[in-house]
Length: 267
Image (cartoon, rainbow, N blue to C red; front, side, top):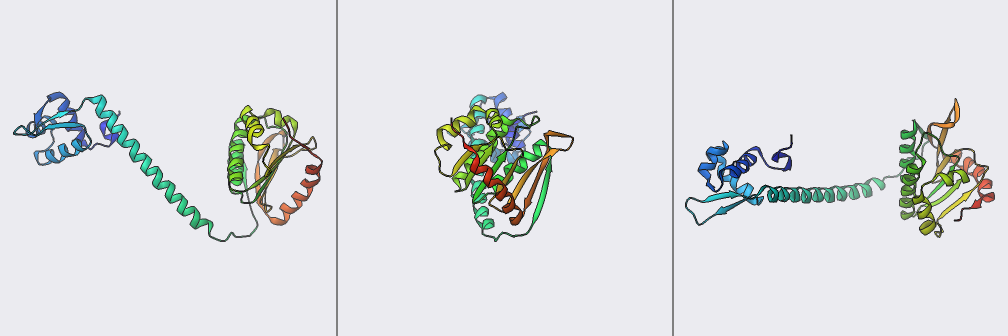
């Protein structure tokens, strides 16, 4: 069950506030008895919840009396405090990430052959988005017909978001796809392309009916290849990510004539 402790109050602070709602204006000594907060702690507890603006005090009276702020107001104040705390934490984490990114990016990349694989639609998309996010110089995407078990509209939006981030980093993007795949994309993708991306010199989309597979070349050294299901060529089985500059160069050489013969995508 939800409790005041979920909003940052200690057990004693929550007891004291709840008791004040029942007692009305009361002294610290009386509140100690009503709330079962030890007398040795009651003043610290009252000072604490007064700092939260959950109680008001009558300083002119002797002994001093306290009264609870109405629950709706008290809860709003606690919620606002938590939101401010979370915003400050988010800013701290963002600062940490920025500092670590600069530090880690300063390390020299290890130029060795490496490959990994993902199996299943979700894992395949996760791997693709990860590698697009890692691009520093250029991205070549070749995409055939949509895969039935993937929500191509959602995937298209996610991929577009990664490509726009890449463009903001100074990465150039070339995309070669079939007309059928273009028709399967969401209206948001088409609108973003027509309004913003189509006019960019570093973003080029062309279509060709000769496209029969799906793969991506990242920075000229890495290739992500979509693997079809061996029992059903129209379904995706997974993706292989291979970092090998020589292989990537060979794949790009095969891609180039198809790119040159393709038609620019225009709306």
